[in-house]
Amino acid sequence: MSFVLIVEQILNGLQLGVTLFLMSAGLTLIFGVMGLINLAHGSLYMVGAFAAAAVAGAFGSFILALIAALAAAAIAGAIVEISILRRLYRRDHLDQVLATFALILIFSEGTRWVFGSFPLYLDIPNYLQGPVMLPGGIQYPLYRITLIILGVLVAIFLGLLISKTRIGIKIRAGENDREMIAALGVDISKLYTMVFALGAALAGLAGALVGAIQSVEVGMGEPVLILAFVVIVIGGIGSIKGAMVGSILVGLTDTLGGVFLPKILQLFIDISTATNVGSSIASMAIYILMGAILIWRPTGLYGSRL
Amino acid sequence: MMSERNINLLTLSLFVMIPVWAYMADEPFTITLMTRAAIFALAAVGLNLILGIGGFVSFGHAAFFGLGGYVMGILAWHAQNYSPLLEWPLLIEGTNSMPVIWLLSIILSALLALVIGAVSLKTSGVYFIMITLAFAQMMYYFSVSWSAYGGEDGMSIYVRNEFPGLNTLDPIQFYFLCLMLLLASLWLVSSLIKSPFGLALNAARQSPQRVQAVGLDIHRLQLFAFVVSGAITGLAGALFADLNRFVSPNMFSWQLSGEFIVFIIIGGVGRLFGPVVGALVFVGLEHFLGGISDFWHIYLGVILLLIVLFSKSGLIGLIAKKGGHHD
Image 1 (spheres, each protein chain N blue to C red):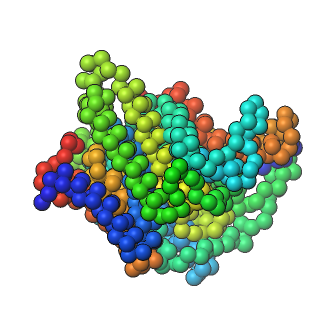
Image 2 (image 1 turned 180 degrees about the vertical axis):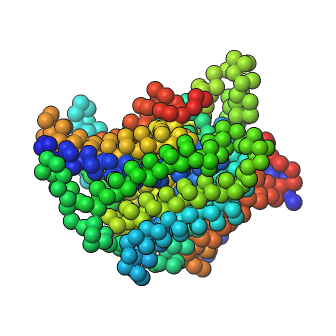
Image 3 (image 1 turned 60 degrees about the vertical axis):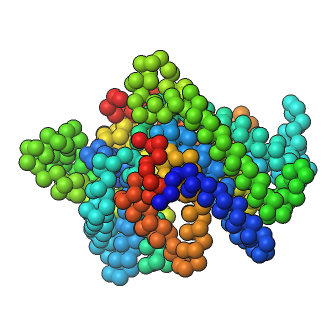
């Protein structure tokens, strides 16, 4: 187990963590402000990826593709919020789960209808291809480093938006007491649509960024969505800070567990068993982490007490 | 307009008459469809106990469904290959006897439900939804990475397992076996609902503080309901695997957990026959809409949205004169 391998895997873990943060920040905001559990968040991720792939295919520009992903996901999110989800904020979670489950079906099959069942490919632009040399003689793909930096920038932007701007004050006020801020004259439904579109745009951005590493296909959003759920359960639902800490924890646990658990087990048992058992346990590692954190703190690391 | 009781009777008679007709008309595929409906109904009857009566939205019941499936798959796989399941410390052989498989599916699903329930019932609301989902997902990834039993590809079992005195390969005989188990579970759940335990569970959903004030341990009530619920769904999983003679990680998939909830909502939450009506309607829709269009999930999605937005008490509530016992 070399130093280089460890650093590489930590970077991979961070990259997964950053992606998860883009997803879970929106989820946790939407839950915190509107009290909505949005299963269709993964669909917005997919919408972003498909929009990016289509625009990149037509115009060949990666920047344009990212803008398209942000816009398409935000618009799709706003439409869905205004036409359907708005009616569900005061309903119980069962109705929300079911309605957003129905939206997943509609989004997935609709996308299949428009784009077909075959995966699309989104290429990494030339100027982001190839490895970059990190201090200590470690080579790492430039695109992935860019992704990590971009994710950190978005996190800083979100943090500033929420703590320093007027919109942020409204969002925080909406989390605490929606009747009160409505009484103070804030157009609450406009605020809701805005928060939803913001969350959707972040999901769309994540989809487009990851779409350049993996293939862009129907159903790509749901595995990420479920990981994002794990993240916000660990971090505490409604907390952006929790989403950040949770995504880094989950990203690192998942990546490092998959690589190092089999290797550690090899020290005790024979190689083939160690590989099998190790990868099986590693696939469960983040859920075990979640279970442990919940036993310790039932509302997550930064969640408000029940 | 019909009373809920008549709707239940109508549903039951459909579950008897359609397969009998299909048998006479020599339409084995219809019998298979009805078997699918009966098994899905069984799974959702299990879920309805914790979701409808207990008030906890479990989005992870596929964990039990899949576990039941894998119990069947693993035991039958060892029987089919004449290799023992375990040689040390004691010799355990595979088996292709349905009663043994059912019993083990029930026990192991109950144990899994005990573990999952112990962690997740500490929370409620959205946390509960996400945690149960996450546990089912954990089972999914575990089954994918467990290469000894097929990994991602799953396992095929060549011959359906045996039940004493029946030819289970005959579709109609296997169907009635499944229907009997569905009826047994309905009887169990209905007597549980009427028992002191069921009344307390129902009350705990509506007003936890009062039930606690009376001196009942809510957590234990809910945990017990979750365990029974998981066990019933696990049994359904074993039957489903036997129906398809195939087990794969897809039996753990989150879509399946979602579909179980859908069955209950279509039929009506907390109603005894809600999941049964829902499963029948769902399998019917799947068959007919699937025949019309490859993209039938869009229509299903639209129908679901309409149900959520406009009918709060499901189909039974829509047809029945007055609301059932739910809220």
